[in-house]
Image: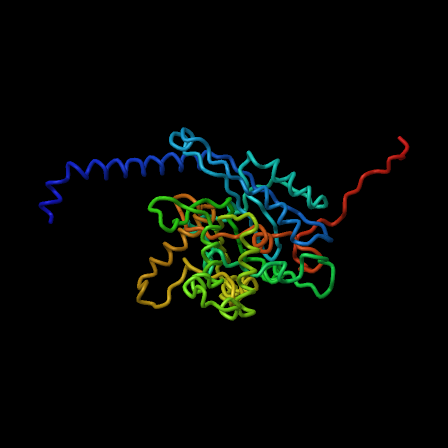
Length: 396
């Protein structure tokens, strides 16, 4: 076997070398492009009263659907990649902030889109808050941390529980309405002055990355896999097998099955985003509270549904058994990696590439929107006074 491989090396070795050279070149050019891309961090300060439902945020999300990939020369020699964004919820000592990190090129477009739906908000370009805390493991740092990343518990085509399921698509001012973002805000507002919680949602317009059935190299987007799922849920293969013997009873779905099919069809009717979700809890020595870890994990439970989809954790900075990390080196390595991944907002590309999951505009607006009167978190940083225009007949 080894002798045969050595004898045929002149034929397959150049192919392998070329493949790895191309791979390394793409890694180098993309890393350089991402490093040289100027970014800005925008803080959105919301007023004390927002009367719009999360549907307004669903409209805003359209600005993140940037599909331009550049031409082949840009891809090969410049490492050009599709634009992505980071939507962030941050608590610093219990004070809650909304941030959006965007390439500087898209800054004006993002601001205009937000103002078009939320003219009452104020948007400021601010310094990156991650720079206020030394990198985890840095010499002299007295910060402790725990972190995790999230993934969908089922296939991407299954939707999570959205604001429409909570009845927020009509009038958000009604008292019986429930905003699914409220538990997140309440958790963020409950932490102490020497603690911080960071949550980021990485967003990019969805790409064709799913293998197309029956094709070796062709890819399809999430809608293709969703169509196959609907086909399966509708039991069309079974009806085809039965042929003329199929009866009406064979085609009838149970109420639960019908609800799943309806939800999936509604989900794929909207634009989709490749997403990543991670959270970090930080506290100074002496202030670390392990219950915050449970709070961070549970902050996404309200989006879950047993017959549809939900979030589960992975890449947690913890171990199940002591012998998995006898000297504690593995956990420290995991924490440094996760902190660096958050700081870089890295998910879609190296050095911390992850497999994204798909959320449509409705789902994305559910987990990140500017809350209205339903959410009354006292520590949510809001605009104290409302700006107004002077009267047109004011004497000068």
